[in-house]
Image 1 (cartoon, rainbow, N blue to C red):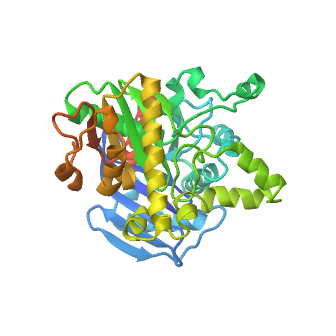
Image 2: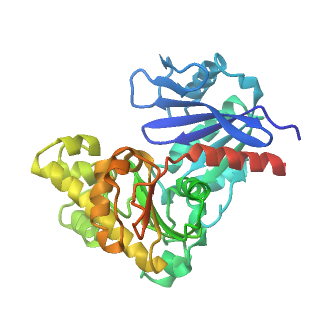
Length: 393
């Protein structure tokens, strides 16, 4: 078939949706624009921060259950700057694919329903992607859509790594470790191989943002991940606790008489850095705050990251390379320095000047473990996978 002129990608979160605009050149997708809709703002704010002419505009539409008006207006705004008639396909990031979706998939009603059936495994994230999928289908019913899954990258993990020590029947019913942020790890792993110009071997990538996790890779293949069954698992995050003794949950339900809704709200929105500090979920604000509570939140965050890297060294049988990515990982040298100081026993020797500059390589030439900073690009992975779908069709 003739190569499309434009592809769109949607990366939906609870507070915003990122939209990538890609031109297709020689069967490769090149980002030509990047937009974000701030779903918390009133009125909504549509920002294009990359493209022919960056701009910001208030929107007339508002957030609804079906998002039809938001998508209709977003396409109308983009049409003033891009040829929206040239859009041949739209790709979406979907958090959970379970054991069914191990690769990118073209979307039809049956596939959308199958993705919806996985909502109990990701109750806060899955519905966000689905309503944008359905809103685009409502506006452009003939447009090809595809879904790329965060869990798919981790399907290479050994069953032993994915298993909880619970009755086998529950594991067989799908209660197991899945891992998330797979699109980010897929991009960063590929970029590391391209830029490092040498075998990267046993690697741990730290995706540190408001949602945060780590992944252990062997020659680019996922072997372990700090997030497991849900996006609550692993290291502390902006508002999520990470590892939590399940006895705490039982205690809160039984002794503290918390309702399910109260418990869910606490775990997803009131814990993590915000819960420990009592002040902020933003590491930038906490680093500037000299209160003991803010310092403790940062120290706990760093301690758990370093501890998880140590655990992954056990999974891999050693570590050759560390990579920091996502908002905190890419832009906050203080956090990276604190983590790497705790990993001196692994043979990590940080280059302070390179780290302060957010350079590509932040370890010294003598460091036994190489440390890097790489900007992630989930949208690029989604666009590349959309091209794969169009190629197969």
